[in-house]
Length: 277
Ligand SMILES: C[S@@+](CC[C@H](N)C(=O)[O-])C[C@H]1O[C@@H](n2cnc3c(N)ncnc32)[C@H](O)[C@@H]1O
Image (cartoon, rainbow, N blue to C red; front, side, top):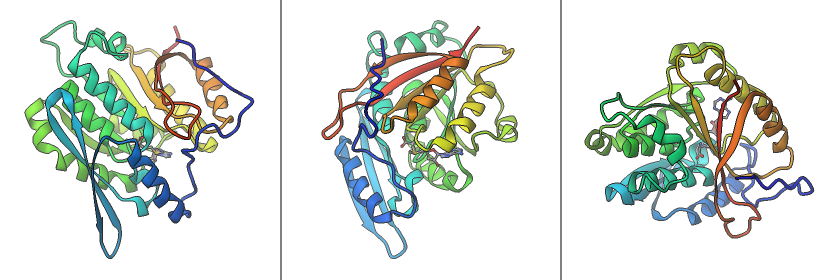
């Protein structure tokens, strides 16, 4: 599938990321996010911070995942549109594994019914919803990672879904992993079948550190081929720099294109990266 690039446009989505100082903007944006979510939102206004406890129903297991967002704490504590796309694809794969955009990538891991559970790493997990849903829908061992200050909220969300994780055989470990830090990768290890991420290409100063971490995890002499699946909503023309650099290091294919949401000219795109050679 070919990705539609339009280098003539700069801002191509209304889902724009704001700086951490723009709390009012973030609150407004959060309202925008919830339009994408087919779930129930409970808003709790506490003295210190606003909590959004959101229920996401998963068709495949006829149950509901609960996720806490803390919009006033910054963009790492909010759910982004690309995460919602990955959640839907994982749920759809569990419902019908033969006709999902993820089939070509995931089916290679399920040929042997007696094989050990999939080992999955999530980068820039934010609320952790993608990792939690991957663990539940695939019965996988997931390591959900983000910057150190984000880890407690991911752990909160993993704990909130402990019952579902236990009944579906999945597990979520939460750990700090700063992009570009080889020592963080050393602690976590490289023994992953699959790496997941959503909405992690946005500020240009983060392109290089993210590519460094991906290189550590996908390139070099390895026991097995690790695959990276990334959902991305394009917002800025400059993001093509990330993809040009990525294509020099990795094979990059498009697995899925979402239809644009209201107010956007592009939808979320799901990419698959693997190491060249
Ligand atoms: C736009 S948010 C997306 C969050 C989540 N994946 C989602 O789609 O809802 C980007 C995430 O990347 C994380 N991040 C940013 N810079 C990072 C870095 N240098 N190392 C690790 N994570 C980082 C942020 O903390 C944040 O959780």
